[in-house]
Length: 95
Image 1 (cartoon, rainbow, N blue to C red):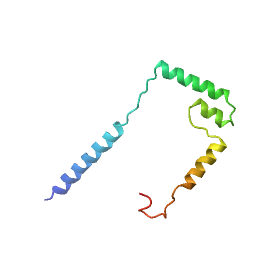
Image 2 (tube, helix red, strand yellow):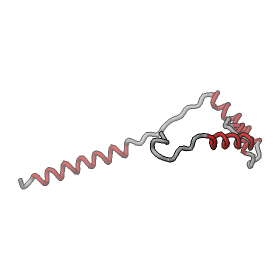
Image 3 (cartoon, one colour):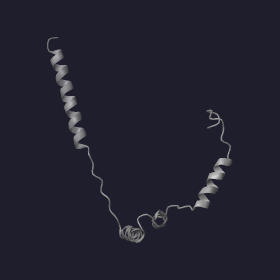
Image 4 (tube, rainbow, N blue to C red):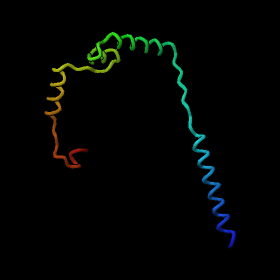
């Protein structure tokens, strides 16, 4: 009985030490390889972005293939959403 607390404390110290060393050695560094097609695509995108004025987000969006709706398209989308049934905010209406 006299040594039980010492043995338990020692076992806990060993377990805590093992956890901290395992956590510090578990850090992985990912490696990424890029093939020539990806590199050329990235170069083309970079060249296109460099040709765009810094404030022209429409030009920049065309370089990276993301939508850039004009004002009319935005208004039509807003009207369409506004015409949808809005519900009453209850859980049943949001399902």
